[in-house]
Length: 347
Image 1: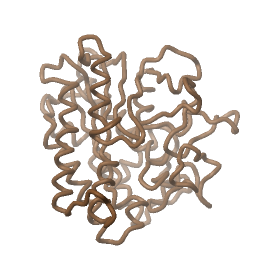
Image 2: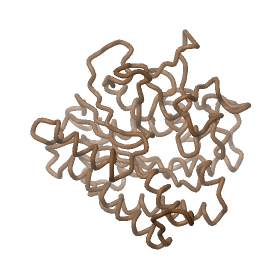
Image 3: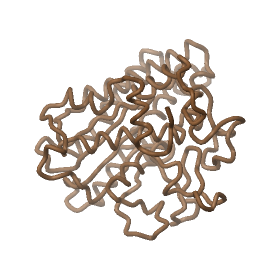
Image 4: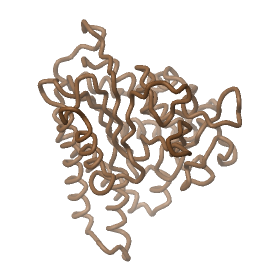
């Protein structure tokens, strides 16, 4: 098995794991049925809008620049190995989607093409609050003619990690000024999940006359380097909060099989963790480490490059770049699942 930096390597991994992929799970559970191959017209978005947190974020290194860094192990140009290449190396999962349709982010546009993809995700974003997903959607709708998404909009939504970390701290940190019991934290995680799901309803409708939204679960944080650094009871709590958020979000999104696509990142990462723990990786370019961050500084990820990795690591040998952030290999997994999903849905 290889984690080459292309969409087929991740597909091969999923096949070798013999798991039910996100695409299969969606097609089995959704009503309507039939992929795009059976449709008279293939979905071809003219605009992409990205909502969420660091997992979807491009950050220009200069104001208005097109030389973005990412919260992962940033990669270099294949010709000039001293230049960070935001467009072709260590792509984010949302970049895989954008590339599928030739859509371009202003934040990573080395060829100065017309920007057709909007980056509205924010660092440290939660579901609510300043820069949160609710505010991101508010601002997008306010800036859009008719205050609505349109059927040729490809929209992505992934958030919740920062909410779970906050709620975990409120349970376990005695110095937290807003403490919560475990039960209260779980209830709050579910409440925020309902709010997150409501944002999808604001961008789509059952008549399929608004946008097309791909929404994702977040990984179980007890499986991250952050979680694994904590006592077992804390790992259990982190996983409980994660699954509570994910499950409640899924319960509150009406899947009409047409304008909403579900990406099960949590299950994908769980499968990879279980697989590697059984010692199945053999090639040095496989993901062989699912426990530690690949970046030497797992906090300051915007400065992490493939030249500043932990000893023995490669660009795709680890699942995590930071304490809770996907590595380049993690983004390959999610990005290829996303492309498989979007090209299979009857949008």
